[in-house]
Image (cartoon, rainbow, N blue to C red; front, side, top):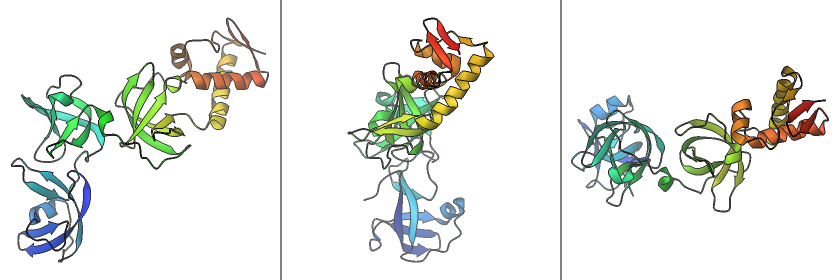
Length: 283
């Protein structure tokens, strides 16, 4: 079955002076797609294809809703998320540039706020009920929970939402549900930001908990050294402790409240500090 907007293997079923005919079924010529010589040249594909050869293509519907194939990937594939620019708006919604002659539509029902021409928006690509590819700002609807990752795996992701009471919602590798919990948030985190993180937990539902910190044993060393140096630079006193608000900690040290408390605990156990109601004292 042909999947729009995704890379897939097809076969050469006919050759002509103007190009090649391809199909997912190597024995089906009737329902084939034409790849012109101009299309092959545009993709810098110099291979001479023979009947039965495999070829990797992306399929989409053109302005006449006719199935087309191309060797060139879109800016975002079906099921992926990223930032696209609005090039036109009308009574259907906003049209976004995504690498093909036909811009992709983001209907009004898929917009979180009104979109104007020139806006760059964080979207995901999905196939609607009618079989057409569309864009949506409702990223959560296209993410999956069947990732191959396990605890302590390193991943990349894109923050698509932040809620103060829950944390930062992340599309891990552009495909999977991820969450950075509130106590692990950093002050510079924002929607649309790319992050590098580590899996701290794979939940029962398959969703992933993340942190941007290193493994705790490594991170504690780094954080406690940094905190102790700040304490020394401040003549042995800092007006912060384990009850200080997380936003104050984030702003002062650029670390999460959880990381701060772990570093504080490390220094306390090493008998380098005293923790009092008004702050931290160097011993």
